[in-house]
Length: 315
Image 1 (tube, rainbow, N blue to C red):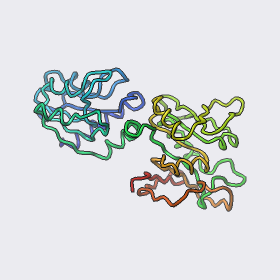
Image 2 (image 1 turned 30 degrees about the vertical axis):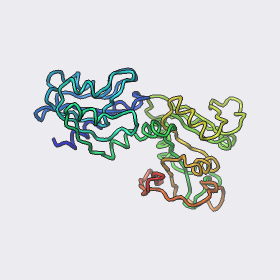
Image 3 (image 1 turned 90 degrees about the vertical axis):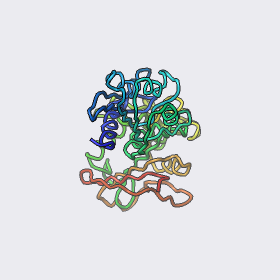
């Protein structure tokens, strides 16, 4: 196996920590000596071992003189656990290959390791950065990573006369998967009053249910189980980040969607497009002050619908 293949093995291991590692990022690590895998690990629940320490403990003395492949730059500071760089140096690792750098200013693992005589290489693989994109936004911007989900007809409308749903069953299931992968799901009060949405993840695998939020002025309808957030969008997102929310799925409706877009708070756009012409009704997005170019579109069929995905601000 070459370096990239071992790095991808570490990235795959990090997936085992998804949903359990917060507030830490999901990280995977493997230790290789003489071309053989001698240890592997992934981030344990908060307060437990980081991926590097797990892999080194499983390797034992076989780690000495070996290479550590890790999906994210090792930490170099004290938190709930000692620095991973200390464990790497103590284990006698001779080389570390990193798939992505930690963007926070409190981590300087590369410099720490090099000063100790450990050879370090950084690859910056897109797959590794994407794996922790929500955590990176949360850690550097002090707010959750926001995904704006829209459902639209071919003529850009949010409803179809005489129909309950715009998109098909497969698309609706994908929305539940997005909810299950998010720390919180939100709509505006207009959607609450019109649809009384539950916003939970149903009939899909979910490590835990997301928090369910309504932005705007209350009161909530009687019996609603949503959390009402009445402050400014910036303030509420900062507070949610403080409460540990790293990813937010924004589902409703044209007014709140436009508000988030205008404030520069949308990181990803996911549009479920149905093969139907509504012929009228509300547009998917309220007015914004000027056109906004987004990153390259990725298209994926989903039943009879098409899912269009683009990153915002990364053209």
